[in-house]
Image 1 (spheres, rainbow, N blue to C red):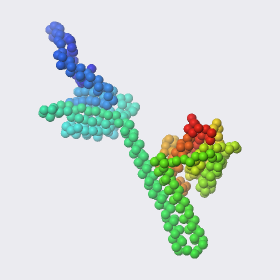
Image 2: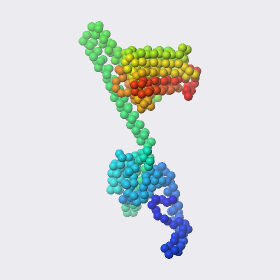
Image 3: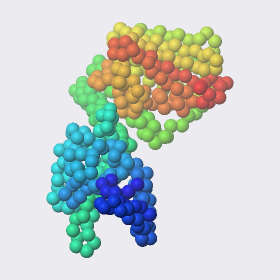
Amino acid sequence: MTVTACEGHRGGNGESHRAGNGIVAHWEIPPANRVFRGNAEILARIMDSVPQLIWSTTPNGLLEYGNSAWKSAVTADCGMALETALLPRLHAADQEAWRQQWLAALRTGESYEFEYRLETLTHDSRRWLLERGTPVRDATTGELQRWIMTGTPIDRYKRTEETLRLQLNQRDDFLATVLHELRNPLTPIAGALERLRRSPNDAMSVGVARGIIQRQLRQLSCLVDDLLDVSRISHGGIRLQRRIVELKDIVAVAVETAEPLIDVRQQELTIGQAEQSVHLFADPVRLTQVITNLLMNAAKFTHRGGHISILSGEKDGVVSIRVRDNGVGIPADKLPHIFDLYVQAHSGPTAGACGLGVGLAVARQMVELHGGTLSVRSEGPGRGSEFTVLLPGAHRPIGSLS
């Protein structure tokens, strides 16, 4: 193995060379040269073992070396212009920017960095690289001798960057929704107060204004509760107060809480429960919140006059709670993210329901804290959805569902 891919034949220790007159000459490599060659071999092995692409060019940009990673990614011969060899392998959107960067480096002789997507030789995938170019100059004259480039794979960092960017966008959208939803109740409250000012002794006007203020304050309270839950989830501040509870009591409270929205939407609610008592070791407030969130979510995304059902029971020590609806359904691409914070399956109005659309994220967190699972199934838009909660029964160890 040699350091540069373009080296010609060199004699080794004890090598023979056939002269033009047919006489075979034999010579020994001086010890100093043997040491140099050994070091070169070691250096070449090191460069071939690293995951980075390493290559070098002449001062005017002609290829003179490439390590194993470079050769496996780019098909190029020594003496070929780097632009000719590398440009076709770059993603189309990155080609011109890289070309301008490389031409500027050749013109100025200054080091550079550039990120781009490199197509694989089979064209079935691509990967992100960070290319760094360093000019090598003569120590005495400062004359440019060659360029040495490295290409470091940065796919993992790019994926992380994209995830963070998506999360920031989702957070910004969520904050915009928060501001909008917090402002909405202020207008009717201001109108109700003005009505009280104009007709303080009119019993009917006072009753109407009081009702408006109560409803809007209830809406504000829901919004604040959602914000508090978001904060608790983000900082791991949710704590459970567990005790033995009966499932039918939890379901009854959740149904009572969700019924006003279901009634307004003129939806039909079916409740199916096991005949025998089902007990859990759970936080009754948080478990009620889970079921309420699922029922409210079903009501929000089920058309007026639609049907919702909640079915619960226990089998082999595992408690199940299923909330089904025949509503708008969930697109397949949204299913993997339906429980993510700040993510909603549908945009736009949600039937005037209370909350900021973080109920499913909160519900999943609560269920997992109880040692259970929360899953969703939908056959697509217009086909409804089903959310299933599985929890260990009162006599089953926490975290023993699998």
